[in-house]
Amino acid sequence: MDNIKINRVPLQPVIRPAYTTKQVTTPKQSFLQHLQDATVKTELKVSKHANQRLIDRNIHISEAQWQLINDKVAEARSKGVKDSLVLMDQAALIVSAKNATVITAMDRTEANNQLFTNIDGTIVLN
Image (cartoon, rainbow, N blue to C red):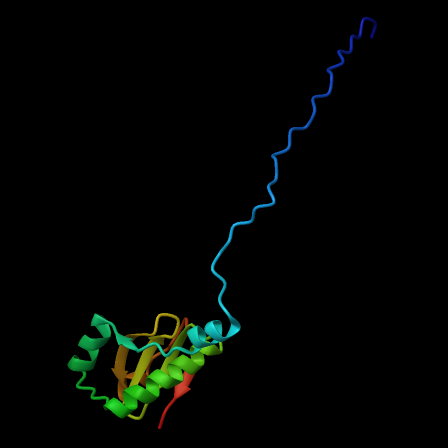
């Protein structure tokens, strides 16, 4: 324990980046603009897979029904739903509310025996 030598290193000053008072400017939108952007209706799209299922299973959905589905999916999206099951008299649709896209479709008799996973909302239409 003899001859213990301690070297003292002089402290170096901490170099801090120079902060500028110039802030990055971004375009400011008014509350009204944000509200309008949030309420813009997104038209529902049908994926290639879902379209083929509609054809293969002979499922016909009227224009009025598509509009109702579109409105309800938009309402679900505004409430935080990402993926939903849309139950109709003649069909069941899996819809990505987040992307406003019908992912797949099946007729109701086929849907009766299915287990639906990874959905966080259900829309029941008459």
